[in-house]
Image (tube, rainbow, N blue to C red):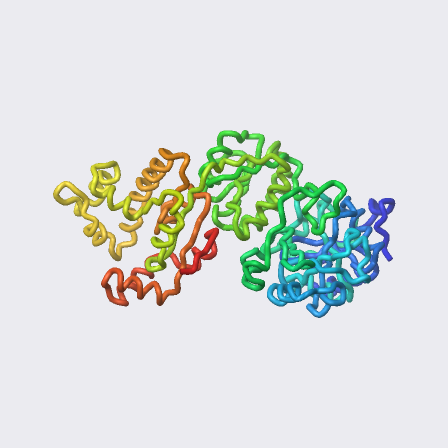
Length: 522
């Protein structure tokens, strides 16, 4: 077996293997089977793999990473049938495995005695997952052993999402790095404990509580308490007890609406610092900066996070300011990693809720908005727009200047505006740009005048107007196409063809379902 002792690690020749070459996958598999350490790609992050059944090999993972030995490892398998070889899955565990494997879900079960204590962190349980990465699956099958694999980084540093990240941390400490390209997801797997009557999420990831609730029912899954793990307590999942994911520079996590967090960071940041900010604001900074994706793009935020930390560390920035994503759904995983990396340097600007409610015509958005806002205040953006058209204000004066044909008898005629932009995309964009800025300004004036009240915004053009940037939560109301068409025809007395044309000019329901924080099916 190849040695990975502290004495020899400085002399070790670490191989960089290419997963495109099948022979190099076989080389990596032979190293694993022989007791060595191989960093392998998964769909989440790169893992530092060893034979999970070989206690000496697993101990070498802790040595290479500088990882506390009470921090359990995750066992990776390449066949669902192997689940029962290394653990004792109950019905909850079996249902989750059937639904989400291969995939980014680690399932904690009572362990089989064949799993050494060093692999499980001394616990009677073990976390097992079947990754959804073809290279990882081929490597595990070729090695013929289950693979214990925490993230392939120095303990506490940002997890690696590319082979070069592993090389930076592990060159000279392990036998090989298997380069399988960039990881798709970018944050570690969801970890769920199934050893009791209810599944408990110990670490959030790409498999969300809502996704698991579809399999187990609403009462069948819950999140773990955020209470800190005691120093003398063994964590059941990686990522629960120790500081993790942190670059050298101090991470400052700023929570709130995208506009509020931007304004805060803009006031604090210096040219010696770095920022990780949403695409909508990236051009406003001149210091070292990395694009965090659009403010609503949870997948991109997860994908970028760790690589951004590593890149900013290479720039030797003093501090890193991060716009925190809204803490819902898939974003929970990114926010969880941010909290761990910031270690208390967290600023929360949220003093109340500003909820944007959006949906296609006929979805029932207005009805849902009224129900949701019963304990707060509702702003109907369409009604506000209609009221503003009747007044002599900055918006109507701008409309009269740009659309003089719609200014009749001293006022803007809404029906004439509709005619002017019908089938004219250039004029429609001009109208939207002009009216949206005025409407957003008026909405924020109303909100700022009542600072102790929660607000709900019934906003058909939530994204197009930029209103989403002022919200602390985004809610989508969705109905199937046929239902929307039938509702529009009944409500407005128009034909089916006209209803379809109206929907065709609106953002698709799939966009709302993907990018909003909550989806209500109506």
